Length: 255
Image 1: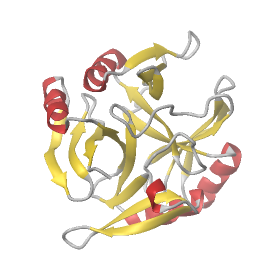
Image 2: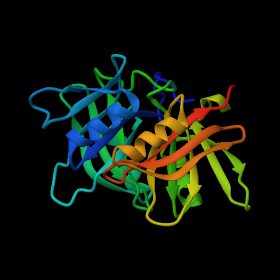
Image 3: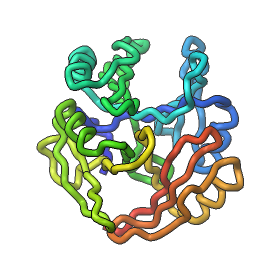
């Protein structure tokens, strides 16, 4: 369960960098009912995404030539400067050094040793996500990586996560992660072995997975895994948006 108390090491923000922000906002607005609100005239076109008035993420244009579109996952940290030093010590890289974002918080962009990007957020006046774990909002995060064991070791050392192995059919293991010292119900994501370069991607709560997946296909996205039921998890479907960014639709099983 992702929550809005934003403990150190927990997801606290998601951000979409889009090749065509207008088209992407129309796609996600139609899918989740999000409304986009300007973050201000000096933010380079950055938008706050809202569901029923509460912030569920941000979106903006690509900021430099060659930058790929992406969903970026932000993790709460009490000290961004210490966080980036630890990233480097553990074999990761720092793409954007800590910078104050208009007094709202301190941001840094990093990559793990497998090259998967993520960000750190040290809150000042703005804690982060205001709505989670409900329809139209983030409810889980998932890392697909070519080195699940290496990734788990990196993030565990960086954020002091606890983890629980979850056996999958075929003999592989899914690693469920949560902030250290918190109970199992505070798990906020998972790490899975996958081919390719890997990425963090968001899992969004929806009430009608089949209807949402059909809408994805109708509005310029792609359904990469048709809606299916996963025992103990719920009904889910893997998709990509018009820019090719991966995300998952999930209607969770009743508690």
